Amino acid sequence: MSDVRHGSTQPHNADEAGTYRLVIWRLIPFLCFCYLAAYLDRINIGFAKLQMLDQLHLSETAYGLGAGLFFVGYILFEVPSNLVLERVGARIWIARIMITWGLLSGATMFVTEAWQFYLLRFLLGAAEAGFLPGVLFYLTQWFPTYRRSRVIALFMIGLPLSSLIGGPISGWIMSHFHQVNGLQGWQWLFLLEAVPTVVLGILTFWVLPNTISEAAWLSAEQKQVLLQKLEEDESDRPNTPYRFRDGFWDIKVWMLGGIDFSILLCAYAMGFWLPTFIKGAGVADTVHIGWLTAIPSLMGLIGMLAIGASSDRFRERRWHIIVPFIVGAAALSMSTFFSQDVMMLVLLFGIASAAIIGAVPVFFSLPATFLKGTAAATGFALACSLANIAGLVSNSLMGFVLDLTHSSAVALWCFAGSLLLSCLLVLALPAKVVNR
View 1 (spheres, one colour):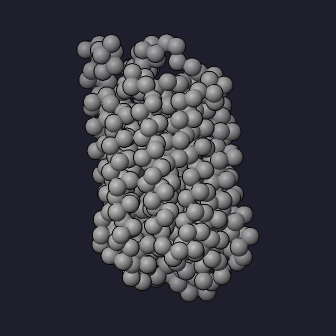
View 2: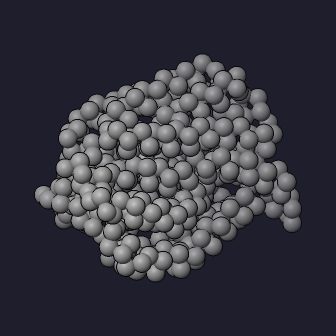
View 3: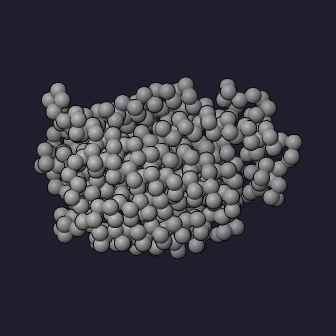
């Protein structure tokens, strides 16, 4: 059994390693940049908020609602979008997703009233729905289970990179483009950061093959190696469910949704509100705020690569999620005692980011360990849909708490508690199923 999992026959070892390196270099950097653009367009509202709230006369609660409405659209269209991707292919559907969300994100620069802000955030969520679970499902058609945590980690470094790069860039745009051609800094922010998304969406038509057989840059022998490894991986779990209803009704999928809910509660608190926390600690300059937000993002990137590689090396999934969750919960809780100490605040959010974001690739390797085919597409999308309710809860709760108490402590304690509770859900997942 272990021979099959590691790549079975000895004569193909060199070909296998070289082939997978080629696939990774051809697919992952491009998909990583796409994810970077997606997440940047999702969270740049956190920087725009520093200027647009006063200019549009929005309260913290109104901002939280608008930021959260993104996830209403995202949740409603997540499963349908992923099912369409399975039918029409990744190239066409991912391109459609990116082009439409880029255009809608750029259109936010024209907002003048609260209802317009709410509407565009909802439409942006609907447009982006299906991207992340779609890419994760797409990767299952290229890589066997024992390679996925590391590959997903490489793809998902786009998430911390979006803040690592986007934070300083967003701060610089808002500072240096303010009042250029009569536009506010936040308007330039939405316009300039939407352009790469649309360009990447157009490039998707040429860069992304739908299947292994369509990859012109692979030889016939390399295609055979990839297909053989996928067949061996499938033969190791012959009774894996593959129908739509199997993915929808599997209790493990709903458990994964609950776990991911906790992850996103914390991730969105950091992504949408960290600039506000840093400003509240006494940093007024948007450029400095941008650079400080990059520190937790860098630590998240390191955690993601380290935890993903360790999980694949030891073939262990559950404790590679539980231990980071405990560390992340502790760091978030401690940060509430340092709201006026900017360096301690950034350090603790960095530890939380390294732990929580670091566990994400391991988490996303789980659905394909017990689902395949349409069930896997459904399972990825359903778990993401359930989890993204956290986006609405996280932003609305944080905005309400800040307006009510002028402190984020209560909300962050709630988010940390949800991480600890989700550890129980992780333990409930059968080790013999997920540790592959």
